[in-house]
Image (cartoon, rainbow, N blue to C red; front, side):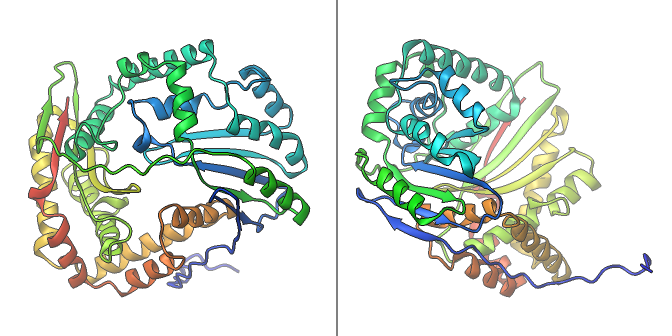
Length: 418
């Protein structure tokens, strides 16, 4: 009989094992990365293009080009493409980011040969027809209008602008007038010159003949090889307040550029951020939400890009509580820089962080994502093993030193919208 008065045992075994993959080198310098550890009769094929915001020549060009990849080929209209994928129960996802554009195909394995040709046609030879371009432009412009009414969206946009600079890919913002000015020829030119595949990823238990046929198809394509782009941040003002008289609440954002994934102190910074505002038991949540009741939620996060990394703190508060909330956030940052974290707090936060990390590889697809992240960002294969070892060995003194080096209150940019 289960005794509910006795709590279950607590395990601190934080093993972290990523799946084994096979790598197939393709002509043209790209690769197909294969993960066969899928027991279900499904697959995911993903193409990663070096064509994100970092590479665009005009604001919004990468996003709009990506959004139109499945909206027409030489032989098929957007509707026909959608109907074929729907017929086979397949799904296409397109994600346009700061560094990459990802195009993924999900379907049952038995329909692989049925949907692959259309997916490949969509990737290699999209046709940017005027009516579809105009429709997508209208949709994107309307979405921007809605987002620009949200304090949180505007605050995030202003924070990135001030940290990296308005002319930097990570700091510039897409506005409606940018989208309105783009043409079908702009999209065709960007696709022809900048859509360079980094790698292809396949998760699915396929036989060798199927893999051979796929590598042959992928390897025979001719892709552009754009020159690498180098940008330098040109920060803006350290404090910015955009007043909106009709707003009841204000969105607060604090942030700064920090060390990236390949820095020796990065793992300690991740744990320090978790303690500050990375989960419900964090210091910011306890102080500003639970004790002082200034907000419903507050967070801090570390956002690594391919070429930079940003740490940010965000919350929404009543307008008359803005100054008090900012003071309390600065106090919490100061505390981390002045006093060592108590051992009990360190252990609880570390265990929560490590448990969250294990949840991120709970499914085959999510585990494969970790492999993809390592490869796309040029990290060593033992990256997560080093992370686990570093976090397990981290001391309060390590985190105190990290806080003093990277998160002093005066180093943060501040934005208030509302």
